[in-house]
Image (cartoon, rainbow, N blue to C red; front, side):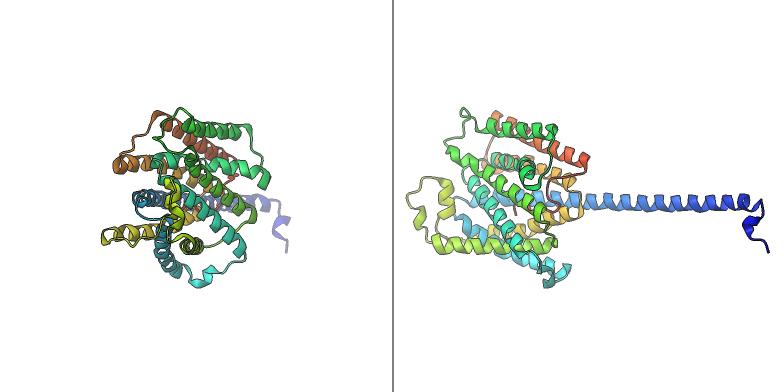
Length: 359
């Protein structure tokens, strides 16, 4: 019995069928690609929702801390918000997989990262005691530029002239805001460096994360961070909780760091409670955003925090931004957004795939 292809017309008859198989395969592949694209778009949309929620929570958190900075020490507020925040994080952790999610192969890395975040928070919050909310927030947003710079020696990344130009423009924005002729209402010039130091600590944490490649669930990372906040604030209390180191100090930032603990009146309890809830919400929302979304895309939405901070400063504290502040803010924000746009276009974001913003 002849085999099918022994007949001269057999291949001709079979070709259309083979064509249909190939066409069907392409259709199936196209459908799979469409599904994958749709899933990626859906994940990015959810990530953007998380980042917007997280940025809004941060803005309220910063506003509340500035509001309370004249009456309470920073380490007391950090302790209360973190004690409540870790409870919120543990509840979320319970639904994400339980305490087993806390196990990690890189505990030392998480400790260093957490300490850098704590330092970023402490220096930024100390700035809030003396600076306009919008100005402090704008100066903190040089962090993406620092991340790009630190990635050169630490990660061996190549940064082209476009991003390097953007970095210089962003730093020019910092210089415009800190120029000698700018009126800061008697604020000590060194205080203006506090949010910049916070940005540098944050950037160091990001680059360290990229270098060592830590991966954890969003809720687990929030628990690590809140635990570190609690331990550091307790250390501050044991050393300076009686306020003896704040006596005779003229700097409001240092007094804010070292003031004695005060039992809050009933009218302020809700503010401390809200700080704690926000701490848990911020830690989870930002970690989740970067976990499921494209890092460069998600990070660009953090800049929505700038107009919100300026708005809170105007509405709550009567802070009217000066022209140099607005110009510097525009330069910093524009440079940061350009860096993210370049990284997205190159599909090689320098920022960590799962950063942990101030929380």
